[in-house]
Image 1: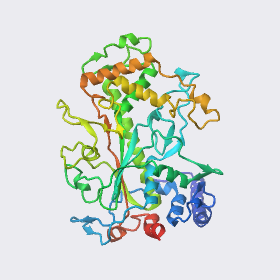
Image 2: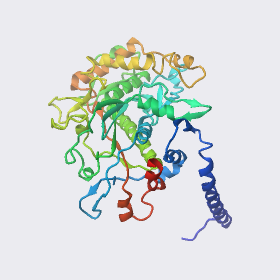
Image 3: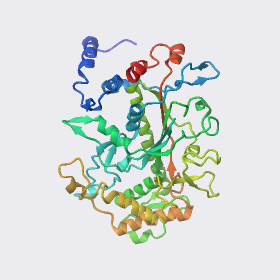
Image 4: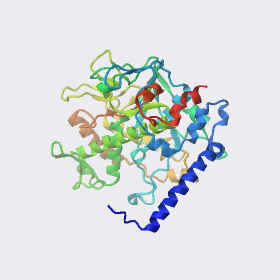
Length: 469
């Protein structure tokens, strides 16, 4: 096809590309010399630190985006057959403490106070009161619900890193982000659950066959974000009632008994289908889990670590419902109701409990626990919770607290679901995991042997030199 672009535009475009190329070439030299000096991240208070940390801070976002690849072949790995048959000649090398905390913080690090949802016309002049947490994290959460946390495992054990209800965990010094403080305060929140790597057999049905050679192997760190979908569902029911709506049971084709007494609070004639709301809860929670892993995936590129985000491990085996006592997973308990073909995992007692029975006696108790999370000390709508505003106390306390009538309305719907289906939610899991992130050191020999140039980034090429020397 004839190029119909006007000649003067072509000339401009060619000139632009030429000048941009020259500019970028010049920028490359000056950037490496000046970027760290002008960085808004303070690292000199770390004492001695590896060059790799400097290179990570300088690494351009655009290179992390276009350089993102699943790089699965780690040190010590073996592909026993097929066109890419290869056995590593090197021993596995675990991530060191700094490498690991940078990845963990990328996946679930607190980033200070989030900005909340400023306005909803229905509540004016009050601030919208949807959010369940006051702190922001490195990944987004629908309406600031923040119902997920992360677990992880490595050669030295299994850990839980709770951040969803943390206050601001960031510190600045003369407008520079204090990386040392950020890493240390998160490391102090780690809870060790076991002194051994999480045991998941490298075979079906525990993991997909294409992952058995590379997942959760020695040297790797496997990050497991987990969502409390039961709490997320409750938060959505609150959101629905806050906006004047309710639900009906579209599975049985019935209205929710007892909602008629809340006719001044919700529109009984235009309810949402139960299954629609539950799909919403699972989808929003899944987005949260995936965004967490994606944030970590970008950091892998900047640091020059191998790894990838994936969903090829059986979630029941990971959480604790494999059906095999020799594969206890993380030890979550589950509803063994034989009416359902799959177990409904509800929580890890004392660590990560879903907002549903048996962790709460009734769904009203669970609802009140969510209200407490939102409005009590440390919550997003408590006047004494600090915040990003000049008048944080005034802004936070402007939210309307959920009334007893409101709590009763939400509890009526939630309890109906549990009583009718003997689980909450009715059609989606109470506790859910799907997407994982693995981080490890690459065996570059494998890529050099099979791949053309460009199979890995400069950060991967120099990782051991920059981080271990």
